[in-house]
Amino acid sequence: MNAASTVGASLGTTAAPLAEMTAAFLRPGGVVDALGWALVHFLWQGALVGAATALVLAALPAARPQLRYAIACAGLLACLLWPAVTLVLRLRGGAVAEGIATAAQLAGPLQAGRIAGTVQAHMGWIVSAWAACCVVLLARTALGMAWITRAVRAGARDPQWQARLDQLAMAMGVARQVRLRIVAGLASPVTAGCWRPVVLVPASLLSGMPPELLQALLAHEMAHIRRHDYVVNIVQNLAEILLFYHPAVWWLSRRIRFERELIADDLAAGHAGGPRRLAHALSELEKRQFAHHEPALAADGGDLMNRITRLLRPATRRAPSTTVATALATVLPALALASAFFAGQAQADVVNAKPDKRAVVDFKSCAKPVWPQASLAARHTGAVTLRFLIGKDGTVDDAKVKKSSGHPALDDAALEGIRKCRFIAGMSNGEPVTSWMQMQYVWTFN
Image (cartoon, rainbow, N blue to C red; front, side):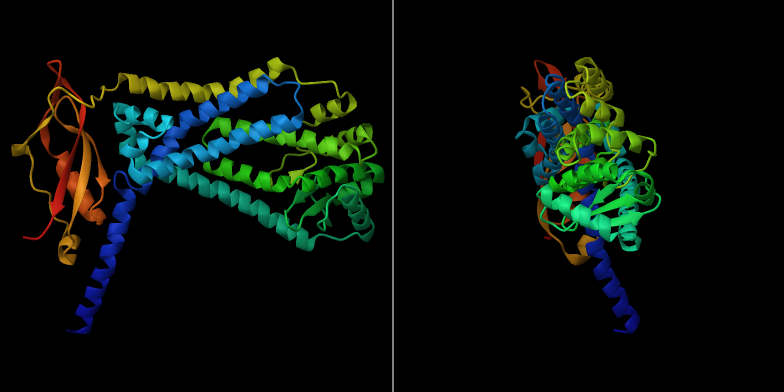
């Protein structure tokens, strides 16, 4: 055998597993398909979580900010976990998993409708667009972190204010060493880092704000460090990146930031010379405020005027009607979108699990599946179990692999073959019905 033929054989051997791996990701029921449906179903899942959280918060307008913060965090965590569970269940068995949970029971009929067929046909584009947006948002966050890293390295040090910050950390029960850096171009102090926290202080505040007011702002930042708020903030950024397309996620994240600032204000007030001094410091800070976005915690977060008013008049609370209006204005569009999906479900053909007369295949329309060339060359064999949906007109509306043969190329060939078959639809009460069937195809050499 010459060198050229040896290289060609090597390339062929390498290409076959790569092609099978790609097919495993792209085939119906594969990773891309499961991920796409998890993202689609989060439209109504997120709407339910957002609506439930909004109702609970609306019922607790006068509760402590710690409780409201915990409720909002639980809502955001549910937004992360629910689609993750949906994805795992779909990867572990599709139809079997759909019978395990209520969410999956709702998802099953949806995929039987014509809306699902349209979504399925464009699933690759849906997942690709989602991934592209995630990459952009991730790059934005990475740039913010890179800026903070450069600021920490290049920022000036001030021994006097570092000593004050150390005393403040000791008084507030923070055992970790907290670094202080002076940075130009910031409007307010910013806290970043968990294990090695750092407070970035604008140079303009150091020279233009009275020391007692600046110390009040530093006490606010120290409260964030004491509570490990930076970790929660990173989780929020992750949720905003992965679930960017859902308004309920952004509303929950904003609510978490709002309540977190109130909690930090309460902790800082006792070490900042009282609530009035902290309110005065925030009032001075508002004059210097400008829009910015970093994966960090800033003293100007939340609604500054609301925070100032709350510090000066602790009994003042946001009106419950405002809370409800804000929540519903954010969540109702998502609920309307979820309703549209379920309307599509209601219009879809009803799937009859046990028709009076089962569907029968028209053997004249079915051809033997074509053996993939790569699998044929590699002499792959195995048995694949298919589950497919037969419409009233006898066509295969949907098909999925229930049990793989161990070779994605063979699974895909079997799916392609069954989709070309025609059936005599199942009957129930003398009428044709949509029903599921299951069959096994064995790939073997005679």
